[in-house]
Length: 396
Image (cartoon, rainbow, N blue to C red; front, side, top):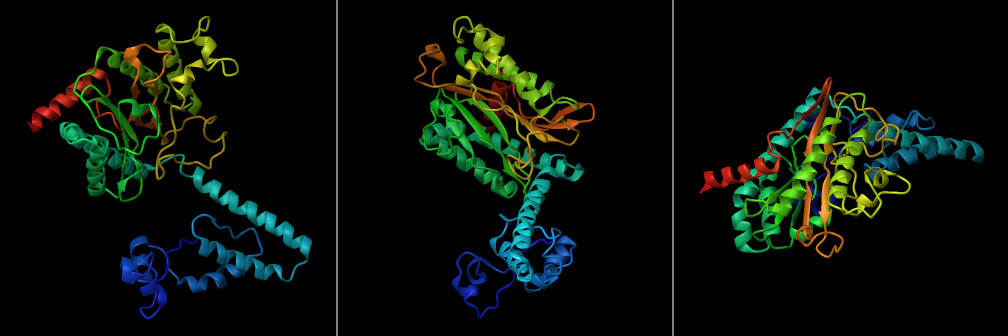
């Protein structure tokens, strides 16, 4: 296996002084081969030796490259393959090229599936990321009154969390969603340009990425005034009940898709109880995959995804390996149901409009069930109110 780092550039080269993206004059010194060997415990060679090293195998499927990782490395592999192909007839070249392309795709897929189950060290990295995220959320809560007072409060919240993430680890694991009021009903609201006002719900979806590049992914929906209104609590408690059902389904032997099925059933039950489903449509009717799905007006996304080095980890795994697969100890996934009632939605009561709620936690599958890695962050409506009150009381 070859792990590629951009090599040092001599100080008298155009790259060193003229390349503002990578030139050492602009961005600082790169590690030497000795530095890399010392830090990683791997044998290091200059990239100029790469072509000769792989050339002897370049005509065979034995050489594979992750094509999207670095264009220069992919080009070097292609040149080595082309050199072998010069001595072959056209049909053989085309057949071998197809095999090599398939081999490259298999490598990318294999590397993705390797991350489905975390080892002990990886789980500890996830714990660290969750711990940093917890502290970042508490920093945001402490500064919520300031975010309200200053205006453009969403931007203020983004800055507070980002500062903490950068100090605790590598930074944020993805663009933070700091969505107040009706903005919470835009699922990936990352503009974060709005005001935060008393009476709003603030949906904060954010995660700290630690130095090892593992990231948390946690959402809390916070009453900006410190207390939920009756309508907000009604929505929040429904989402909380759905999340509880989803977490309960997180255990070995259940399928990944069972988590969503458990959570969405609770969502459907509440929508039916509130009279929001069309007349004559019951819970089973809306859950019917072919003829139902009326609940998706207010809960459109999936409940879970794998989590790790990427916020949506293992993206190249097949459906059979991902959503249809059984949960195994060492897997880490999110459980994040929500309900979203847009301000202009005339199918819902006035008091629901403009409120969006999502609750998201990071769940580790264990031998006998699961562990909520973010369990220290309050989730129920009463506990969230007490959390806010405690932080504000300590900072006053």
